Image 1 (spheres, rainbow, N blue to C red):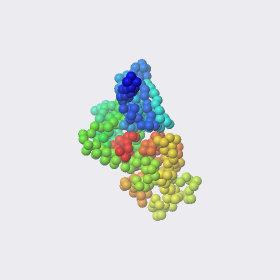
Image 2: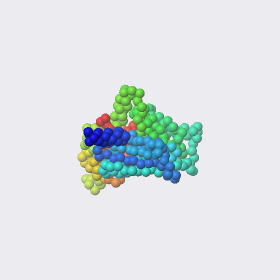
Image 3: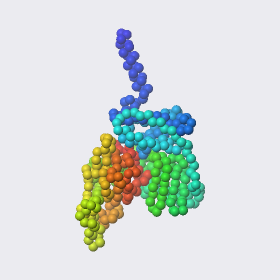
Image 4: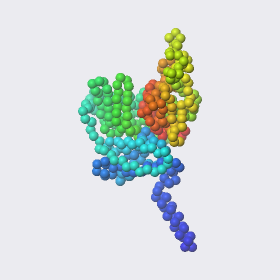
Length: 378
């Protein structure tokens, strides 16, 4: 009897331990990554309670406890771009790479934010500021069917300036809050850089997605339908179609520029000045499928898109302008200076600084932006 009582006590203790550890013991996927650590002030070493720790460009994140301790679990192997934010401090970003499952402790030491110096900042009621704010809002939110349902909730955190050369610049003193009521996301954007000049825009910074609270199931279904609409024809859709070798089925036509050394003719012969696409095929460009462009990555969660020359992409499900009169579809040029980019099988670009994109797919903005962990098959 004493033997069985001892066994029962051990089982009870084990169950208590599992209960205290929460659901992670059961919910953790095999082959997953766990990151734990602490967020502190870089000078004093004091903990920063309730700091936000998140995977950049995703809905994956957590809040540190009152002692600054955090835990992020169930993460995929590969590159993890981690962001940490806390009111009054500069947002931190750190990229970690995991090539196998495991747990890693990462400590974050944060630096207090500093004011911009040497920049003319336009006051909230200044007429110039209102004019420039409209430009910035248009360029950040884009011009899609969902743009009117996107709002910047705290424009007062924007520091906007115009230099003598006509560059419109902006930074945010705190995360810019963008609510996308069409897709169901609240986006926290640390706008480190914004530059608009002669119709071209560049912006960068950490991006954290948060799900909006839906009123009912009907709203959830509407958000999901809008998300699917935003996905169709997007860069994420294009890259996923390359991985699955289903470009044609998903409405994409992709052509690869032939290297100069391999071209049959030095120039394209146009008939009567008509720059038809058919005159370029086989001479300057060739059609390619996903099987030609995609290579396996060094780990299971990565793929390589490989092309040493420019890619020309058409979305035949969307009318638009292109250099070719016989191809009146949305047109994009993709260039990879290093000859390749690393992506996930879900179509997220791991190293976005290693490629250049111009044309239709280069016009994606926050009104159509989906987080990196969004799944089309949910």
